[in-house]
Length: 180
Image (cartoon, rainbow, N blue to C red; front, side, top):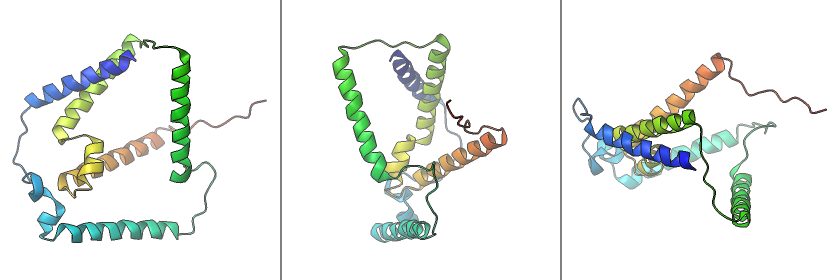
């Protein structure tokens, strides 16, 4: 997939360009341990982690006990998604093994431009935000870093805002038509 290489090159270029851009303004939080929720609250890390865990478990139990019935067309749960993903991965590996070799897959010129621009924006955004969505969402949130919580909240607001705009613009899933 040559397009993936173009996207990766754009990512690197975007990060290199973003390194040259000065970040104006004062730093709100010091780095390292001082920029965590426990340090800001002056509480021990295990206590803050236990409070977060209790809150998450409480929300999950409340949602489960809300009596909501499973509607057709809803998302699969983890018990179905995990084995399905594993089966598809093994099926893809087996198909690639039996196909007999490697192919180069190209893209259109417009698509190469989109991939390069998207990669550059991704690289610059990751540099400016101090990490990517996965780094902040999986690692930083688990470490109770304030900046990671801000980034994840901003991502959630961005996704929600985009969905509102999509709904207002009439972007709805296509209706299924029966096949004769």
